[in-house]
Length: 435
Image 1 (cartoon, rainbow, N blue to C red):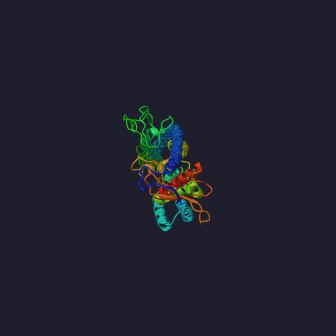
Image 2: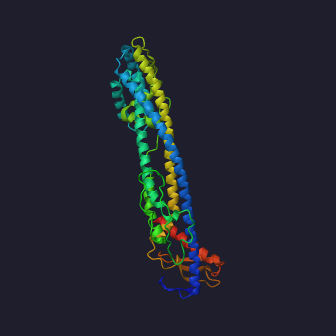
Image 3: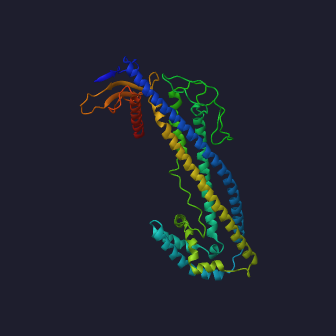
């Protein structure tokens, strides 16, 4: 039987007082859930601020490491150019060793490639043979492959750093706008939401800049919704777009992970495979496995040209220093990239925390009635197939839904509408997630 019912139009005052009371009780629960969502959003904002402080500290360390690395690379490059400009010596000895080194190097490299890397071995083998025939033992003698690997790694690190900084800069602009909303002000929110919908007018919210407090992108415009009534719809409706922008800035699903700087003593299989496919220089990293190739490195030409031998020693020292700083910078970049993942994860949490609230605002075309409108409550007679109560409700402007409440909970108990409101909200969230 129907305990009470309400007109079908939500704007008409329900004639049954119990329905009005039930609507108010259910709306109060929804209001508390909205307050909890906003509280959770603030907590996530605090975590994001903390994460960004850590990122700024790491960024300062990165800048110092970058200068050390680039200074060391410059010394390496300059020394290499001087060594290349010096006349080659010990040519006969190195050439003879090179002819015995090449077959071993090719066999060792192709065995590695076939076992570790992807398909395409015949093409890679032909490419490798041409590369070895055109290469000079002098290139091995002066550690040319290590210099090339250093230069390539430097370019990739620069690209990765510029890309991450660009993303954080874009994120900063979006979060500036998002967190200027008075939803994130330090003062208590209540009574932000009330029945019927009201408005709050507050000129006290300060301008902020989230990730780059000293950046030139700080705007002189008024804070978000400044001089406007703070209604539910106006407050939350823009959030979806802003969060989407922030998530796009932090979307690193298509961004390659840093593979790590590989030195002669620390070969990364993925990097070596890539180098072999590109220009075969990755094969030279395996010269330590071929005796004759090692002998090339051991050739001493100091008796013929002491100055050249001195330059070669200087290059080896410079390489060791540059590789050390490059590896350190690479490790810091990985930490910086992890901060990006952390920020992206927090954005996901922020979206999950408030998206249903924003969706409520997007589905609300007016704000003249309660969050939750009860239309009817029906109790089944004892002995019927189901003795649970049925309640027809509408959550904002969503489609009406029929929910059940266990028979043990009477409609006049406070827990009755808490169950109804929770089920209505769960259905709304589930529908929103599926869309």
